[in-house]
Length: 333
Image (tube, rainbow, N blue to C red; front, side, top):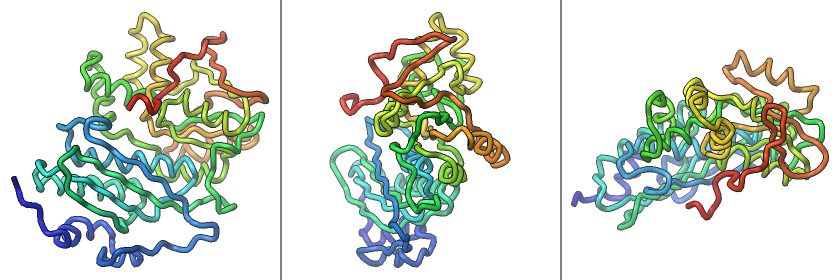
């Protein structure tokens, strides 16, 4: 078994370069970090990946690290916040070669740089374990809204229109192929995307902060997450399944289905899309779409908010019963 390097050597060689010399990181030579001052305080999100649950033991660790970053980044983007610091807690299996740490650090550093606006690593902890690899990342964000507050689930209003970024369903399809549950023909991009689903561009956070009344990232499944917003805002939300944006691969897969509605429902309940769903006043809708296009952010209207409660599904002009499984639940883990 390869001997692990001394802790402080590991910090200096692997993790310290990811601080990008941020003043508050102190070069990772101390036990604390200092965050930039925010009038109402920073916004914090924390998520983890577990070997055998969120990724396969054979997956490249650069992609495992990217998946970890993106799980957290999608939360901040949907809240209208930009990342300003990251903290990593890593439980490293003793039987894993130490050389794989470099691949993990490379993937982590690349996404913190390219997707998170050069967000520095400010601290954390690395320990060894006889169990599976477990990595937890805490991302600290700065709200971009004029109010200095994040865009929460509870702010939607009757009359708002529901928009979503990007496309839905590819991570679900890609995971199905990777697990041998479906044929991978024509789903090459979906398989790659399933390794580390890509959230919308970071600039999306500015648009959400400027125009959204409520917002959430699609991690549990589109139907489940819209339900979270409906419950928090105390509103009735209508989703038009015909309007759900799909990639060319997902569209082709759907066209071959003998039961298109059932297949479409599997896409909107699959989860791990990491896109943002937001509720926007109808007066702001055109501005949101127009400002997003030149920035490479595509918004699609998929529904509306009304007085009442719960979620209503419509397909080809008719009401669709809500499926028993709306998305990921804790009992699925």
